[in-house]
Length: 355
Image 1 (cartoon, rainbow, N blue to C red):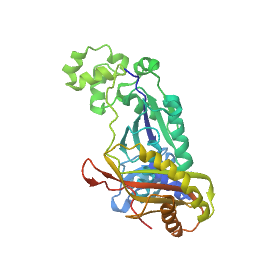
Image 2: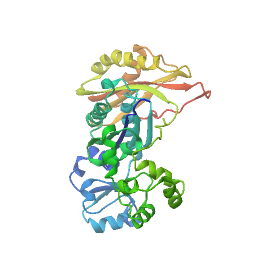
Image 3: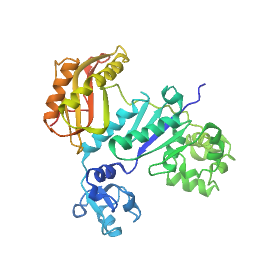
Image 4: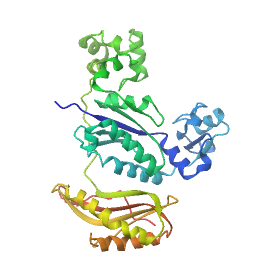
C-alpha cells in the first residue's frame, strides 16, 4: 500500500487577517471581527494581539472589551472572506483534486499521487504557503503527516505562519508523548474521564487493551486505541463536483494598462485549455468568465453566455472588465463554468458577476 501524504492547511486568524490586509491601520493592534457590544454581539475571530489579552472566538463582545479595552471590533464582510477562500482553493487545486474543505479557511489535501516537486508533500506545503502569502498577503500554517489526525495536529504545532512535518518514522515517538486531549474527538468530558483513569498521554493509553477501552468509552474506545498508535484510516473526501475550471496569475509587477492585460491572455488561455482537456467526459465547458483584481485589491468578475472561448472572445471580456476599474492590475484570471452532465444541470458558479 502506498504511504499516504496528507497536508492540513489552516489560515491564521483568517477573518482578522483579511481585515488587517485591507485596512493596514488595524495591524499591530488588538482587533477582532464580531458584533457590537451594545447589541449582545459575539466575537467571530481575533488577531494574535487580542488573544494575548485572553480574547477568544465565541466570546461576547462585551466581555472581550472588558479584557481588552482598546480592542477594535469590526463587522464581518463574508463576501470578502468567501472570495479569499475561493482564491486559496484555486491554489490548492493546482496540486491535487483530493481536497476536503473543513471551513472557508481550512482544508485537508491528499497529495499521495501528486507529481509536483517529485511527490514531496513538504515542498508542496511550502509552495502553497508561499503562493498564498504572495497572492493574498495573508499567512497559512500547514501540517504534513501520513494521516488526517496527525496532519491537523501538525498544522497547529508552529502556528502562526508555521510548517511542521511528521514523517512515517517519527509517528510512534511523536504520538507516544502526545497528551490525550490532543486526540481527534476527545473533548473536555472524555479528557476528564481519561485523567481519572490515570491516562494523560498516548503512551499511558497504549497500556490499555482495546476491549477495556470499549467497555469504558463504547465504540469510541476502539478509535482511541488506534489514535494512541497514530492510526487514522479516514480518507480525504473531495467536497463536490467541480463548478468551474479556471486559471489565475498574480504578477510580481502590476500590469499598468489594458494593453498589458490583453498581452497576457494567450498564455493564460493555453493553461486553461490544458486544464479543460484533463476534465472527464461528465463535464461540458459552458460560459466563459474573466476576473480582474486591481492593485488596491478591488476586483471584478465578468461572464457572458454564448461567448466563445478563443483569444479574441476573452480579450473582449477582459476589456469590459478592465473598464470597470481602469487602474493597474495585480491579478488576471480566465475560466469557464461547467455543465455537469452527470446530473443534467449546470453547476452554480462560485464566482458571481458583479461590478
